[in-house]
Length: 334
Image (cartoon, rainbow, N blue to C red; front, side, top):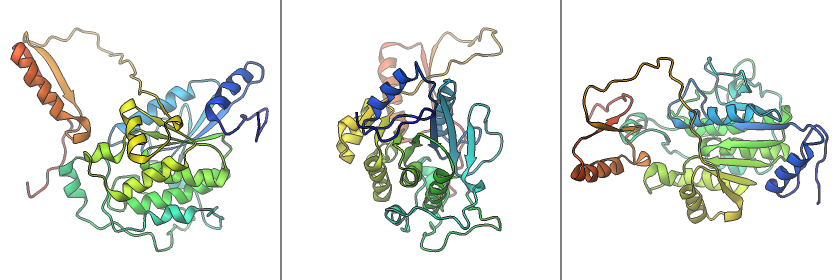
């Protein structure tokens, strides 16, 4: 085995992440080894707008419950109230970058993807998109602005300046990677791929990207070429790719040209709900209830719910189908 790094307090790295993981588990029987994970996301509970932040929270809680794993989770901005009892949480907006040297090896190629006048809002439904894209996305040709403490301003939202914010996030990620000790980089979805690439370039550590969805899923098939380019760049740069389903795995192989051996499917888990009130719920009617709970978007497949309801009701008439979702703003011209 050709080892590139061997340290008692660290992990062993070769060119095969899965083999390394098995090796380190065996080694950990004799020497306690801590795997330190530097993780990049875009949102973290309680400040979330969709399922991505919730999924990241569940993953980090699960990993942090292991005795031999330490997680540092990075988001663009901390809003307050984040649960940091099991992990370290860093807000990129709290990291000074003034008088720091950024490792720009191939970094300019990453930044170039953001120098476009494109309106991108990734996790909203079509009606919300019409509202939010009535603005112009700023370019990134200008100098990065900092406050008097040398910190970069982030909104941490999916607003009109999203592309510039992703580029600034990647810049700060490079600095964070220089300042922290870690063994592996784990990033969630395309918003954080450039940050992961920047961290890898600064540290040389392995990069794992977690594909929760692709733009083919979000758009229904008509992808934004700029988002696709960012996704493809992240997949090419990754040492390993995690997908949340075999459907997504096949999408990554077929649409992005990634080698199947590089991709592994790990399904999302469900955390059991423990209600405080154990009083039995009484419906008040005899019908069985089937509920759709989620965003009314192509990605969530509400049309399948309606089609299933139609088929069921042709056979059984004592079933009630309910579609529920959170309120959203309505466009003025609707």
